[in-house]
Length: 122
Image (cartoon, rainbow, N blue to C red; front, side, top):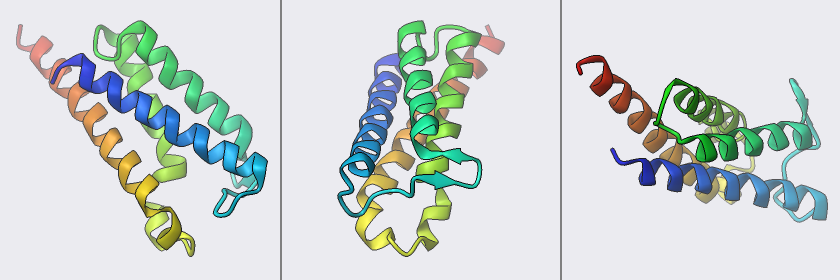
């Protein structure tokens, strides 16, 4: 899979997370809780956006660093948009973001692991 698709998927995660955190700041429902069991949502989204942008800058499938950053961006995004959201009471209101983020995550993972597999056979 071409890197441009991976970059597009990473940009999608960045946009979804920024919209989420802006809705929290503006208190526009549905918005995420201010805290989650592992941290405050603001700092977590900040790290998640920073990692995704770093993956874009480095090149999401270019080398080991880019692939690690890309996978880490997926893991961090899935804290907010993972399968656990299917049982969230707000799911009927947030499903477009959840499904979009999961599709973007899938594109990134396929791209990263297809590229890695291709390099191991070279």
